[in-house]
Each structure stands twice: as structure tokens, then as C-alpha cells.
Image (cartoon, rainbow, N blue to C red; front, top):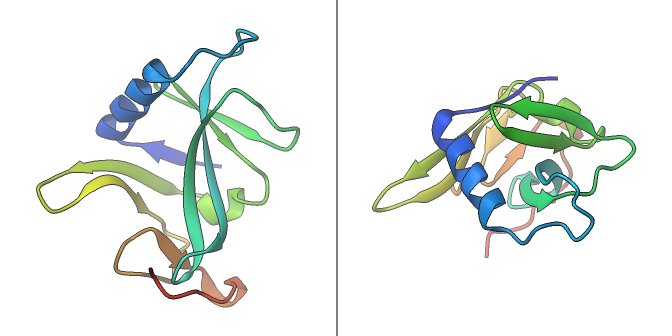
Length: 123
């Protein structure tokens, strides 16, 4: 399982982790990368700060950031590269996914062959 963060993405995620409230139990915080049904193309990317490791999570260390990927999302994220774009017209995380057969214009959702659920219009 390979998920790669660019230098910019790792820097941004480290900043988000540092700014988030500490875990009351002292657990190490990481970033959950996931795929869920939704978006205009069928699947939608998710990024969340968490300290709760799930039993089926794959744990990937990228530089100084721990990434948690659930087993259901892992096949759809295999080989993905996550970058951070900071521009006048667009800012945010950008996913380059070799498993995507199509993606929407906003770049936040994608299709993956015949297994993609029905998409919903962008709002």
C-alpha cells in the first residue's frame, strides 16, 4: 500500500496536526485518508485529523506524519499522490490517483471503473 505526500502536503498536514487540540489520553495524532461513497463522480476523498486507530487501519509514516487508511479505502488509494496547491484561484489538497478512471472538475471525487457507486450532482 503506497500513499505519497509531497513536501508541501506533508508540511500542511504537520501544521494542521500541531494546531489541533491535544488528545486527552496523550495518543499520537495522525491523518485519516479515506474514500467514501459520494461526490459528483461516485467516490469522494476524505482527510481527517484523528488519534483513534481502527482495527483494520493500515498505518503509513510519511516524513513526520502518520497516515491511517482503512482496509476498505486502501485498494482505491493504492499509489495515490497527495499534494497541496496554494494559488489565487484554487487552494487545497490535490489527489493524483492512478486508480481513477475519471474525476469531476472540482477534483474532490472520482470514478474507479465499474465498481463506482452512482454519483450525485455537485452543489
